[in-house]
Image 1 (cartoon, rainbow, N blue to C red):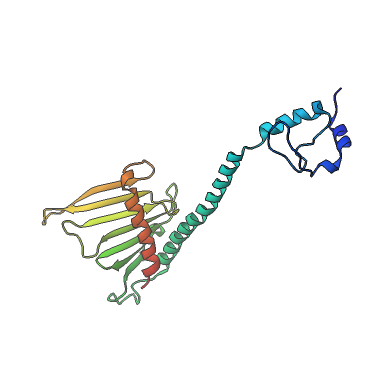
Image 2: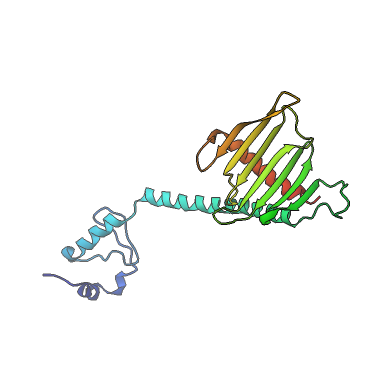
Length: 229
């Protein structure tokens, strides 16, 4: 005889809904009405078997919980990096240097900030024997918004000098392009030689990514600490 769900509910009532009950088929116990124990085994067994099959195993539960915890810990760090990038861009684009405009000699670390065509802003600071330049390029058409950071010798071009630049396309704190150029001899006619190049999208030069990423992170912190002084 077929028993309808309404008859099961009527027979066993609400008193079983929140009761914790053992599972005789050796799957773990259910509570809060997930398994209604019955004296009529043929009626309950189909529901019981389906629930046993659908129940998540304990290792899977632990793995899922670990993933959620890791996600909660990693997300704020990524958000903080993105926030630092935006802070650096806002700082570079808001500083006016030289100021007063007609007085070019000053003792500031920030050498110059200028607005290029199409809204790009470039600002440079001098720190020890290196110059750090920041170029914020706004989006246009299919071109993404990007931040390019240049690291170059402050005393100009000479044989043996190293020039670097790194680019972050979507301002997420991860570089998309990096390049190293070395100036080679002879002294009278120096030649620029690209010795390292990294491209995230094409996976070129992936062995250079850690060094370029460190340079980008250092450049962001230098801008936040010194730009405008």
